[in-house]
Image (tube, rainbow, N blue to C red; front, side, top):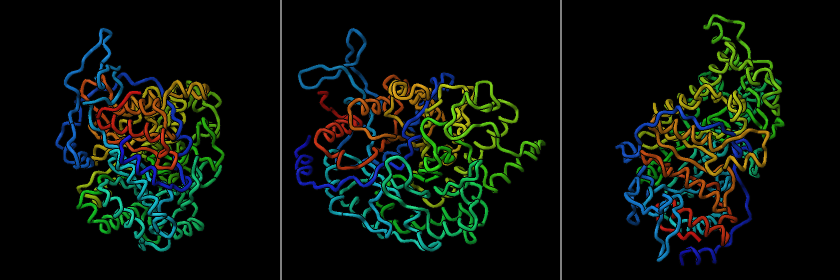
Length: 538
C-alpha cells in the first residue's frame, strides 16, 4: 500500500456502516443458462471515435497512462500460459496484468450520504474517505440523486443543496462523478437501512389513484416506482410520468452546469425502474418473495391492462386481453406451473403474444425516457442499468427473467432488443453480477439452476454485438481476491480476438469495512490491475 494511503487510513475515523446496496437479493444472486454460441462477434467498439470522445473523458489526467487495447506481446510458457515479470520472478499471468486495457474504477457512495433534508451527512468523514480512495488511484465515485429528496414536497420544487456541496468536494479532489437519476424508492431490499420514499406529493396522488403503481395479480401495489403505464398519461398534477422525469433531469443539468462543463460529471445513469434497473418489480421482498422464486408478472394496474387489451384487439384476438392465469406465485418453481414448465404455455401462440407485449413495454419505456435524457444531457454519456437475473437460467423458459420483462427463453435472445434500443440513444449498458461464479451458486442453491457466468457472457456479447459501451458493477459485497479476479476476467476477456473490455467498473460500495487494512490492500491491488498496472500477486 502506498505511504499516502497508509497515512490517510491511520487518520481516518469512519462511522459505522449506515447503508448497503439497494439491489434486491435477486439482483444480488443471478441466474444463467449455457453461453449463447450463436451470438455474432462484431469488431470491437473500443477503437471508434465515439468511444474516444465519450468514454475516455472519465479518465483522470494527473499522470500518463497506457490506453493500449491489447498487449502487443507476452512471454508464453511451454504450456501456453502467459507470464509477466514482477521483480526478478516470473508468475502466472492473472487477469488485468501490466499492459492490459485501462478500465476506470468508480466507487458507489453510501445510500444515506445525503439526508431527507438534502444535506450532506458528515462531510469531514466523507472527505477523509475520498482522500483514501484517491490515494490508490480510484477514478471517481457514483452517487444517487434521489427524486424523493430533491422534489420531495411540491411539483418542480427542487432542492439540490446537499448534492452541490458533495460535488464540490469531489471536484476539489480531482475525482469524476457518475450520477444516477434515481426515480425509485430506496429501502425494503436486502441490506437497506435507509428509507427514501417517492416524493410526498406523488404518494398523495397514489393514495387516491393506486393504479399509478405496478400491481400483481392479487392486487398488491408496489410503490417502489411508477408503473410505465402512466408514461404518457397526465395523472401527476397535469404532467405525464416522462414529463416529470424530463423536468427533473433538465433541472439537474441547469443546476450543475459548471460540473458538466468542467468534465467532472462523466456519466449520467438514468433510473428506469425498481432499484434504478430496467425491469419490472417482479421479485419484491415486501410481498413475500424469497430467492430463488420465479416472481410474478406486474401488469395488473388499469393502465397496463388497457394497453394489453388494445394490443390483443389489434392482433384480432380480443380474448387474449389478459395475463396468464397458470403462472404460480412469487416463490413457485417453474415445474410447478403450467405456464413455465418445460413445454408449457410460455411457448404457445398466446404465451408468445403476451411475453412479446410485456417485454416490448419494457423496451418502449427505456426508449421514451432515454430519448428525453439525451435532450436534457446533450453531449454527456448516458447509461442504463440492467439487472442480472441468473436463477432458473438453465431451464427452458427462464421464468425469473420472463416475469422481470426479459423475454429470454432458451430459444430466443431477450437482450438483443434492449441492446438495440440503447444503441439508438448511444447509451451504455451497465450490468451486474460480474463477480459471481456459477459453481458457487450451485453449491448454495442447486435447485435454482442458476448460471451467472452464462448470463454475463450472453448480455455482454449482446451489447458488444450492438457496438455499445458496457460498464458493470458487483452485485454482492466483495473483499476477496477470488471475487476481484472474477471481475477482472470479465472486464478484460483475455482470449477476445477484438480486444473488447468494459468501459468502466463501479464498486459496490464505500464502507468502513472496505477501508480496513487487508480489505483495502486487496482493493488497491484490484484497482491497479483494472488500470493495467503492475501489482503484487502475493
